[in-house]
Image (cartoon, rainbow, N blue to C red; front, side, top):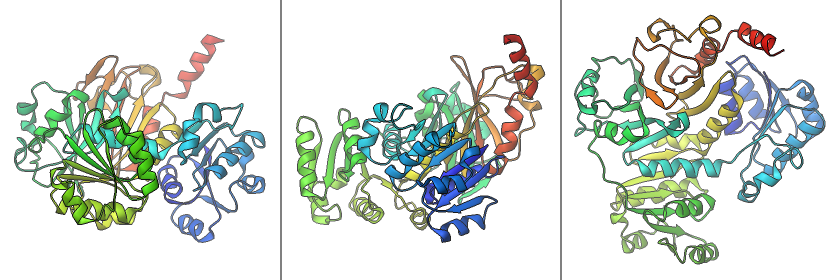
Amino acid sequence: MKIIILGAGQVGSGLVEYLVNENNEITLVDENYEKLQAIKNRFDIKVVQGYASYPATLRNSDADNADLLVAVTDSDEINMLACQLGYSLFKIPQKIARILNHDYVAEKDLLFNDNAIPVDNIIAPENLVMQEIVKLIEYPGVTQLAEFAGGRLCMTSVKAYYGGAIVGSPLGNLSKYTNNAIVKVVAIYRQDKLININENTVIEAGDEVFFIAAKGHVRLMTSTLQKLEPPYRRIMIVGGGNIARNLALNICSKYSVKLIETNSKNASVLADEFDKTSVEVFCSDPSDQNFLTEEHVDMMDLVISVTDNDETNIMSALLAKKQGAKKAIVLIQKYAYINLLSNNAIDIYISPGDATISALLTNIRRNGITNVKTLKHRLAEGLEIKLTGDYNHSNVIGRYVKDIKLPLGISICAVARGDEMLIPDDKTMLQNNDTVVFFVSEKKNIRDLIKLTSPKATFFSSRTSKSS
C-alpha cells in the first residue's frame, strides 16, 4: 500500500516505525528538514520537505498514486485542507486526519463527509485519552487495559505484588484460583524485559503481567496478582481543559469528584456547568501544598493530572502522592519523561500519542485486522484479526492451534466465536469468522502474521466467479 504521512512529529514518526515493515511504500512529509533526515536515516522511506497543504508538495509525494493519506500535523486546519486536496486533486481513496480541536470534533458528523470536508476517518486524541482513563478507573490496580471483541475481552497489564494468590507460584497453579474463568497470562516483563513463560514460570513480586480475560473476569484475575483494591470513590482531577471537563462529566454520577483549574475565568465557567452535579470546582495551583492539605488530598483514592503541560501533570501528581493520595494517573506528551520517571513514583502514564497510533493502525491495517492497541509504551501490541475462508483457502482455518506455526514473538491469546469466548489450547481448531486476539512482542513480524492469517488469493477469485 502506498501511504503518505503528513507530519514528522511523535505520531507521524511513530506510525512510520509500525508501518515500514509491513510491505508499505511510505512517504513522509514535513517542513522540518532535520526531522525528516533523522527518520530517513532509520527507515527505508521517501521524505519530502514542504508544506503539507500545498498541492505541489502532495504532487511531489506522488499523491496521484497514493492509496492512503494520513494527516497528523500539529494543525487541524492543515490536516483538513490536505485531505480536501487529496480528494479533489488526487482522488486518494482513503483519508485520515488527526483533529485536536474539540469544536471540530463536536461537529464531526456534519463536517467530515464527501459533501463537506472529505475525511474518511478522524482521530480525536482527547476523546481517546478520556475513554482510556474511564476504563482504568473502573479497574483499580490495572495499569493498562485494551478492549477486544467488542469490549467482551480485555488485554490487561497488572503489577504483581505479594498478597496476590499466584505471586511466588508457578503459572500452572493459576487455574486453582480462577476456576473456570476465561483468563490467560500472555506475557511477563521482569525488570522491564520480556521473559519466556510456560506453566513452570514463577511469577515474582515486581513483575508486570499482561493477561487476557473476559471483561467480567478482570477483577478476579487481578486479585491473583495483588491484593485487590476496593473500588475508587474519591477522585481529584487536575486540569480544566476538554479532557478534564469530559472526564468529570463522564464519572460524576458514580464518584465524588474534585476538579482543580488554575485559570479563574475557566474555573468559573466550569463551576457553573457542574453546579447541579457532585463535581466540586476549585481555582488553585495544583502544586500548592497548603491547598492540597486543606482539600484532604490524603483522602483521595485517585488523582488524575490532565493539563496540557507535562511538568504540571508530573509535579501535581508527585505532590499529591507525597501527601497521601493513593494512586495517580498522569497525562504525558513527551516520551522522554516516561523513561525518566519509570520508578513507580507515579502509577499510570497515559500517552495521547499511543492512543492516536492505536486508532490510526486500526483504520490503516487491512487483511481482516479489526482492532490494534499499542502496549507497554509501544514495545508490544495487541492485535485482533477476523478470520475468513475455509480449509482449502486459508493457512489457519480448520487447523489445530498446535499445528499453526506463528511468527516469532506472536502468540494466540483468545478467540471470540459468536457469543462464545475461548482461551485456546493445542486442540482448539480455528474456524471461519473467528475473531482471534494476538499478543505481539516482535512488531517486525506482523507482516508475516498478516500473510499467515489472510485468505489465499484463490478464495477471493472463487467467490467472485460465483457471484458473477
